[in-house]
Length: 115
Length: 112
Image (tube, rainbow over all chains, first blue to last red; front, side, top):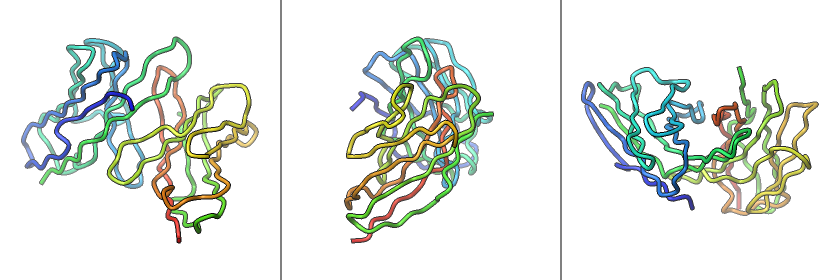
């Protein structure tokens, strides 16, 4: 299994509070991703990173920000959580081979509930 | 825009029966295609992938998938399912720039 950990694994918070989720990898892979999983929607990309300090938006980036100050860590921040951000959040990593789309490896997920 | 459709939200099969999960994609170039499996409360695990070459791809746990360009499909098959195959299955297409677009998922239930 790819060395990917997510913390916390479960979190309950209140509307309007800031929340930060952490993804940590031990594989030294270049790419890191944050997805959210909701019933009927599969997984949707929030943000991704292609290197330290290099990030870009995904399909559902509104209300989220990210940071990557080290290769191994990718943080997802909800500046002011809303109930619509209740979801399961997955981190993924991949290594660029220089062509096409490489396999992504997923972490165990973080279940976030916003009351 | 690229998209992936998994027409079946939920499928129920009997243990020992054959299985086919459907996946249709929309992508202008040669697609990079993936099937992932997610057991309850777990992350996603790669079953198999297609990049090029032989259109019949073998994966882990006895699964295989066939790429059919003319039908824009990448269906997942298994000749005989086991109770442990109960899970949710996701098809995904590579969007370039190392991004994936996922289908909505198909939940598989196994009857004993």
